[in-house]
Image 1 (cartoon, rainbow, N blue to C red):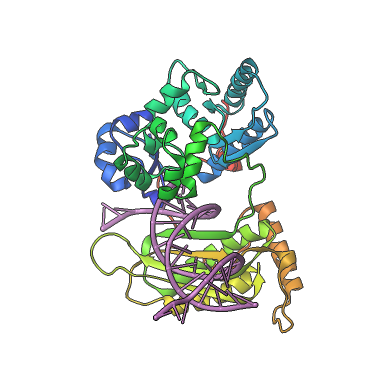
Image 2: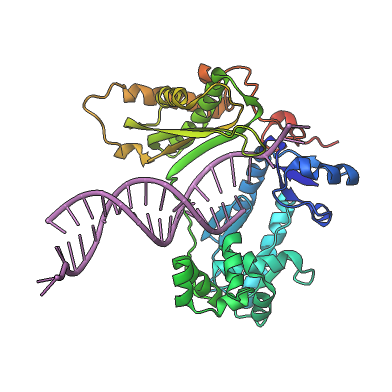
Length: 392
DNA sequence: TCTGGGGTCCTAGGACCC
DNA sequence: TCTGGGGTCCTAGGACCC
């Protein structure tokens, strides 16, 4: 089985069997099509409502095992187990694994170590080793050397493709060699991140547990289109939809945007005309009102839209985000911000209670033919009444 | 024919200040 | 002949993460 990205474009998750067939991460779906058809691979559209909800359930269980927890991504979290001895850690980890499995049906693996980088490395082995039974503890462990030796440098957390190639050129091919590299020399080569990498691998923590999710500094919403968009009305509908999404998001954090950027692009692939352009507008007063943001966004689209191109993607960025309470008002403001805030609060309230998009802006369009395709979606088992599993 | 989406951090260089 | 020293802020580009 494989899971596809938005628009059923790329392969973004694979079962063990799919990996064995040679289907690569990030591969465009159409390239994998022959393999998929030949071996009867099930290709599912991504179902973020389901994944998000299941993630939230898992995280809530984890929270019961350590109050010091950082939700790192949709399927990863860091927990602080410091101060516990080996046997206590071990039994807690086992209990945690069993609880998540019992309450959600999701198998998890656990890596423990002195630093985040080493803990990530430990999970790598926890996931793969049969003997480990899902738990690997590298804290003051005799296996640490072996694990570092067996890890290629590109698999270390924080080492991407480009850095891995450079490191290998300097004769650093394994995590162990990276740990033993000269920190000062590496700092010259890779900047402060190089130094942190070495220290973290040596067991000196450079990154703490971030319990509070940080307030976003920018919010982006962009999508590829199902069919290329050639008409400015459809383009404005799409941009309005993205603005609307992004605005809901900043309001949920109590933020206002000082500026917005709109970008349009044709396909990045193949021959023919490639076009990309972006326009940024600084607002006279920071705003979180969809209506106001929309009026500027439309002006931006007018400025960069050129008929004749087959646009494949558009997106919006809200930046310069600041808590509403810190927004600098203007003496010559033309917007009644109190009224606007009441309106947005009412709209968000209704949509929260009755379902996303119950109320939306006319500019977002009705038919929205450019909307994503998702050809093989699993039901939203846990977030939609009509999709709820039935016990027979 | 068909190729995702959303973030953060760091650095170098330029402009500017006293 | 010779031309200081110490900062901050902003931006673009690169790298990384999931």
